[in-house]
Amino acid sequence: MKIILPGGTGQVGHMLIRAFLAEGHECVVLTRHPDERTTTAIPGLRQVAWDGRTVGAWAAEFETADAVINLAGRTVDCRYSAKNLAEILDSRVDSTRAVGAAIAAAKSPPRVWLQAATATIYGHRYDAPNDEETGLIGDPPGVPALWGKSVDIGKAWEAEINAAPTPCTRKVILRTSLVMGTARGGVFQVLANLCRLGFGRQGDGRQYVSWIHEHDFVAAVRFLIARDDLAGAFNLAAPNPLPNRDFIAGFRVALGAWISVPVPVWALELGAFFMRTETELILKSRRVVPGRLLAAGFTFRYPDWPAAAIELTKRWRQG
Image (cartoon, rainbow, N blue to C red; front, side, top):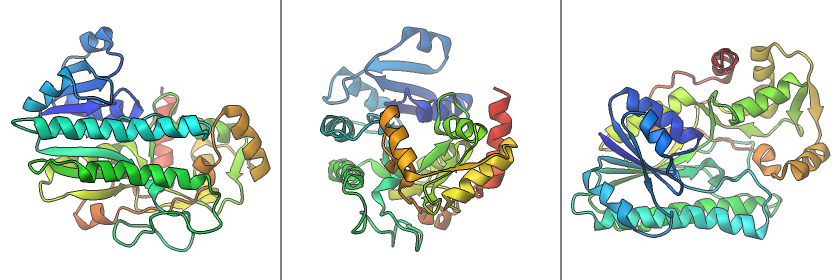
């Protein structure tokens, strides 16, 4: 296949590209800053310039493509200032609108469009899991007002792909949780290093953590591309989310880190301020489950965190 990945220069994009190239597919990454050294060094990979907002010469690539996986969007690992929130929203909505316009204009459009989205669209809750059919969209009363900005962005993101006039292209929305991989600088490495330093559960540790092993993430994307009968929103998360205190305990066992000092909310707020990020990323309870993937017959290699943590830790230590 020829697979186009707008915004495919990040860690999640690299996971998919490695897997697709190993299977003999062609990958075209749309990026604001093409790097000729990358395309020369990796057979089967090309980079094409785009601005992430307007349809340009890059749209010609869609005429011969089989699948599009749009991963474009500014990182949410930042302070939620008005400026940053506007950039996060615009980068997602504008890029999705541009991709939709390119597909709509193609004489021979791709057969499937997978669009990145976020599991944070679901509400902060402890009482029950959120699946695609019965999950609560939006946070309940009493949740910090700033957290609602992430939900609003998630809704606008999905509304853009749903509105795109692409009747010949199947559309799949990827409501993705934390993708746990061994790449340097990824969320797994950050949390593993904190655990090695003795940091334990965050806050009261009750908040649920939804995650997915990188192997299962890639396999789920491959599954959704292949299944022509599947469309709409899918939760990309392991079937067994767990409270933060148990999530950190799984890290500690895998790492052999026996010192664990709980981190209170005030310390998290202070740390987030100096690290220029937000505590929502670790304090919101994201209890998300992959109802539609399981119903469609997808099998997870790593459904439970303890086994996933051990496998990831082994490869991470090997570099």
